[in-house]
Length: 217
Ligand code: TMP
Image (tube, rainbow, N blue to C red; front, side, top):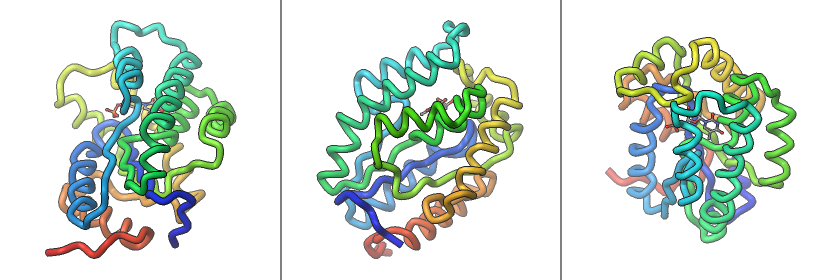
């Protein structure tokens, strides 16, 4: 069912480290463009000059002492700029915003992973987003052990990737809980499947829920 309150559509990809988000961002971006939709491909933390600078601080392994509250507020500082400079204008212009992470990541990592609780995250969400929520959140679900193994193969770990496995277990559980609570706004796909299968499941789920133009070929 599609009841989007803005002319564009807002899609978000989420999942813990090593869930295959980067590959699936590329695949979905290509499929949406092939179907003739204008795509705004972006990411969090990041997506603006300020947001990318904040991302550098947030992921810097040389800042191990960052407290959980500072981390949450910096995530939302980057998000505030992203909303004002990129997301809201693109949605108003009728674009399909495809974001590599959004506020669900704050619920998962800071709310659950860091233990700040969902209430604090929800307060910031209400303040900065008002009624704006993604039309669809695609959750690539994977066991933390398997995901971290994939992430480690990519090389030097960032500040958050250095967390212990139980941190990612809490984040994964929070993602799954949120998805289970609103099945019409979340699509959960097994991130451990091969990338072609994951891409097919994502497209099928998007097609079911949003007015995707027919894909050619
Ligand atoms: P990634 O987008 O390359 O996966 O890395 C971003 C990291 O930032 C990842 O570890 C998840 C984390 N993150 C949060 O902890 N909270 C947030 O709100 C967002 C957007 C990301």
